[in-house]
Amino acid sequence: MDPVKRSLITLHITVVLLGGTALFSQIIPLSAADITLGRSLFACLALFIFLRLSKENFRLDAPRDYAIATGLGALMALHWVTYFAAMQYAGVSVGMIALFTFPVITVLIEPLFEKSRLAWQDMISAIIVFVGIALIVPESSLNNDVTLGVITGIFSAVLYAIRNLLHRQHFSHYSGAKAMAWQIMVVCVCLIPTLSGSLTGASQTSWWLLAILGTLFTALPHALIAATLVHLKAKTFSLIACMQPFYGVLLAIVLLGEKPGWKALVGGALVISASVYETVNTHKQQKADSKCG
Image (cartoon, rainbow, N blue to C red; front, side, top):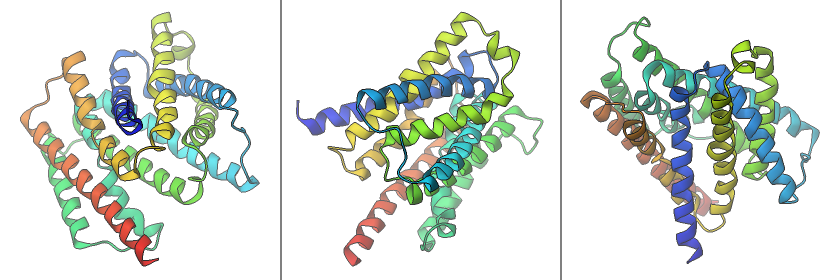
């Protein structure tokens, strides 16, 4: 098979796996922090084994990079905990939609990190996302679990956006597997103090599910991403990655029996459309900037 076609198929499988992580918030009877810690333990072990087998050096290039990895890992820990919490509050479908506001959030906060300006199109994207979120919020009260889940999901999206911007600035010279291995190790260190009897006393089934989540749905996708980028453009990767909420919602409907209402579906379509637009626009701008440079 042609390497590009094989990479495209692999990338779609990778995005399906990443979208499938949300399902574990419903099928593992543990708190968001416990699920994140269990996931991270298995993912960290698997990624370091992968680095060993691929004969990639564990060490980072400079002492400063260890501090950066620590900061990125702490952000990742908060992001993952709030990610699973959002799904547990609002359900997978609504939680995924709330999380996928992060591409537009990234564009809005990017001027704080890099020398860039907001365009009027970005403000329109933000308005579209706001309308989409307004459609899926049932009421303006934190006593409503869906509303709380949406707010938690958006907070998780903000954390993810900040982490991604910092990673791009200071840590992108490392392979995806190596960067994630170090950050997930920090996630484990951050969450070990929260270790509860619920996790240590979890059933054998729960531990198997955590192992599957950490290896098949976390470590494997991040290892595959590095392989697909050898033959695919970054723009292709980003656009296909935008299908993650679609795959996640579809899996939730088929496997969990979720039935998102029309407002959630329309709101999700608006959020995802704005995310796709910003993804395309960002790559166009980067291409133009590279030509000017």
